[in-house]
Length: 289
Image 1 (cartoon, rainbow, N blue to C red):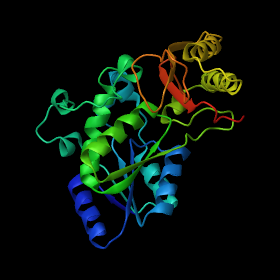
Image 2 (image 1 turned 135 degrees about the horizontal axis):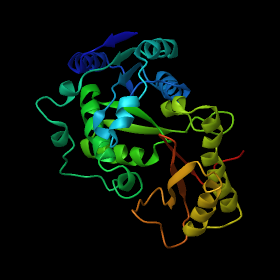
Image 3 (image 1 turned 90 degrees about the horizontal axis):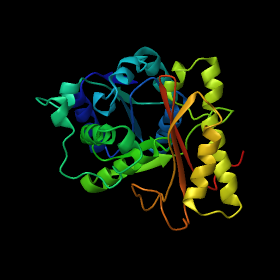
């Protein structure tokens, strides 16, 4: 696997690959890789001629400085995992490489905000989704035309990315299922910051989603009723500080809870456990155990 510390060199390499009529698959990451990331890489390898992964801890999407300061970094082990997964090229860079001459507050300004930057994550993490949109646009510019693979765990983020890709063209965004531990906990780089007791408590998010999923299978389509059962499950754990337990129509995103019965429903949860912020979600009707 080739590793490049320069986005401009990565751009040149991707241009060369396309000239050879090879398809490119792309997985943007912030490193600290786990099996969830690697599942995206492996799918890209299966579906494309050339797979690219970026490793860049984007400061724009951290609304809490302490989260950026404590974000795990494991570049050497990340490289080994990527090579084993069949990645062809990985690249990284510095903030100035992606936003030359710009201060952080200027880098996130956009004239065309996405519709999905409404409610939930936007309300609880001001500037986060704008920061995601800003860096992903730069990352797409580096790689060019490609299939880009994202995990469903960051569901609202995937909506932002899909809107962005549709606007700029050339990138086919593929959203892949959340990879979970055997007990249901969604895989996340942040999980490494949980102690043993917190790790057990964190599975409450999955149990809350499962409770809503079970209610959905009985025919309940009222969003507020589905939200209530998730909140009640989360509130059983005093150590979890709930930010939201929400239902949204995945095909018609709104800032607020739908007031009419929903035909399709995405259940989304965010909660703080100590200093670790956890998120999870699922399409109701899809969980089986």
